[in-house]
Length: 523
Image (cartoon, rainbow, N blue to C red; front, side):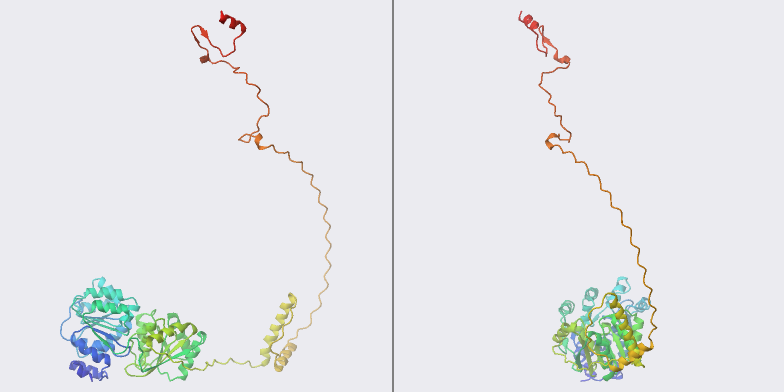
């Protein structure tokens, strides 16, 4: 089967032939006719199998008839990263050179002015990352109600980067009767749920079991210590037939440090990671594609969809945290039917990650036998005496330190010094012998201190008076009077006026009556 059997137009077949392709890949052979029939597609295939051309080629023929309007793109392609978006744009320029289709690229890291100017003119194909698209949509610079074809590329990568909520919101802004194409290397449950929600009676195309590596890639794992990674990497780069290589690291700081180390050791290396601006990333990729550099140290920003011809080796300097990333990383080699080699450095802490990877791909990765890397020999000193002198001086310092606190029992030496070293040390000591010091004069004895006069004895304290019992004090701590008040003889003070009153000639008094008063009263 060739591309002419898929129903493509003559102008498109001519562009494909000029690009050097004649036979479609399995994913292209199954997807292109269904896209031309305006069916929804779910495509599951490994990286490097031609997924991009499987939707770019039929889209060019579908969009060949029609007219674009300002700020209303006719089709939309969503990509997770700027590099993938730029690569899809290159494919449209390459295959659509015989068609008069307008295209716009909406990615972050560049000015919005040119992008908004292109939208004002009207575009047939809009290639965008979700973040920049939502930004412009929120500002009212773009309308999606005229988009009749939607492509979601690298859907599993969209999931990893947290773009699924944005994609769901974008789908709600599009017409309901659109055509939707979804492509992914794996099919997690979240992506399956997304497809069931936004695709209508899709045709599922699966050219290989999900998350499997290409049979054209020879995979190896290298058992290595964490500190010896750089030495092992340099040895493999020198001994194996490495023409171009991509080295993946998990952290951006490691990408910078490793690229700097390789440059210092004579390798033509570059770097690409998420902290670089878009212009620097594109410039570095162009240098790698042109052959100016043959080693590219990258983070996972370059693990998806980048199509660089002739990559012979892929190195996982750090074992990937997610098993799916392993499939995408090694997929940068062995593309378009070529062969490639993938090495994964495995430390003791990577045992669980490697086990998950082997479980995902369904096979055990063989161990690559590697001799221990030879380190650069240290330069030997020109004179043996110069090597022995520091040892002798250190020995003298140790004796002085131990002499200050009392000598400890000398431990038996593990190895006896060689005769030539002893002779060299003795020669150095003899040549550097210092003249004997003059003996110090004896110190004068210290004068005896005068005896202190005896302290005067303190006078004895008077005994404290005994405290009275508590019951002899009142509630306020005051001492109660010990004298008795005596018998109560009645009131002996002045009589108030209100007590002196009488009834019918009788008068009462508080005092006791006398004898005369008593007789008068009786009479």
